[in-house]
Length: 395
Image 1 (cartoon, rainbow, N blue to C red):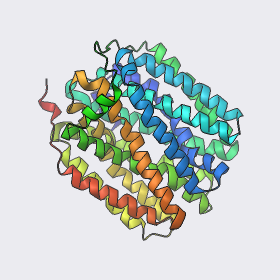
Image 2 (cartoon, helix red, strand yellow):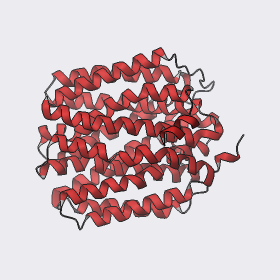
Image 3 (cartoon, rainbow, N blue to C red):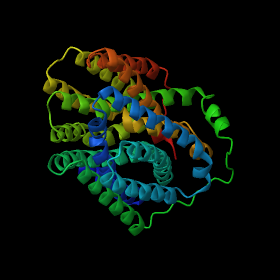
Image 4 (cartoon, helix red, strand yellow):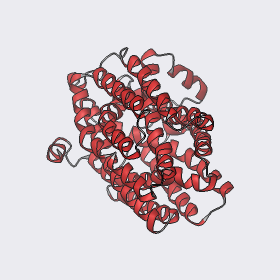
C-alpha cells in the first residue's frame, strides 16, 4: 500500500506539507487522547465533561465566523504557523497550571485558534492539489494524519500512565515546535489571497446555506465529527469507569486508527474515479448498524472491538467528504465558504456531546448508542440525495 502511495504522491508540495503537519497531528492527537479523562479528573462526571466540551465547541463556531475575512486576506501558511505557536504556548501552560478556571479559559482560547488552524491548513492543502487529484490528495493527507493519531495515541497513553497528564502536554509542545521547524525548513508558501474580502460574516454564513448541495455536505460532514465525539469524548470516560487504565485508552484510540491509515487513501482515489454517493451511503448505514448493535453489548472488550471494526466505514466517508465539498464550490468561494464548512467540526461535536450529556444525566450509558445510531441512519438517507462528482474527467 505504501509503495503505491509513494508512487502516486511524489515528494512534491503536498508531501512536504504532510510531513511537516505529521508532527502537529501527533501533538493534537496526544492531547485528544487524554482530553476527556483529563477534564474528568476535575469534574468526576462524564456528563459535566460533555457540557464543558460543548461550551468549547460553541466558542469554536463563533471563531470560524470571526476569521472569515482574516483568512481571505492573509497567506494561509502564515495563519497556520501563528495558530501552531499559540498551541505551543497553551500546551506549556497546561503543563504547569492546575486551576480549573484557568484551564477552562485556556481551553476556550485553544478552541479559537483551532478554528484558525483547521481552516487555513485545509485551504493550504486544497491550493496545493491539482484539480484532478483533490480526492487523492485529501486521502493522502488523511492517511498521514491518521498515522500520526495512531502513533500519538499509544505514546500519550504510555506517558499519561508513567508520568501523568502534564508529561503529555510537554510532549505535545515539543511536537508542535518540530512541526513549525519543518514548515520553515521546507519553505512552504501559499501566495493566493482574495482580492475581495467579505466583511459581512453573517451574510456569508446564510449565503452558504442557500445552496442545496452545500446544505447536504454540511449535514454529512457534521455527522462524521459527531461519530468521533463518541469515540474521543465518551468512550474513554466509559473505559475509565469500567476499570481500564489511561494506557488502555491510548491503545484503543491507536488501534482504531489502523483501518483509516490503510484505507482512506484508497477510498479517496476510488471516490475520485467512481463518485461519492455509494461511499457515503454504505459508510453511514454501517455506522448506524454498529451503534445500534452496541446497545446490546455489555462486554467492554467486545464493544471496543466493534468500534475498531467501524473504523473501516469511517475511512469511506471522512476524506471523501472534504474532497466532495471542494468539488462543489469554485475557487472564488474557497476561502469564505471553507470557514463555514469547517463549523461542521463544532456542529458535530455539539450534537454529539450536548444531547448525550443530557441522556447520561438520567439514563445508563448504553442509551447513548441509540442516539448515535439514529443520527447515522438519518445521514444514510440524506446520502441518497447526493449528486455525484467525478474528478477523473477534469483537466
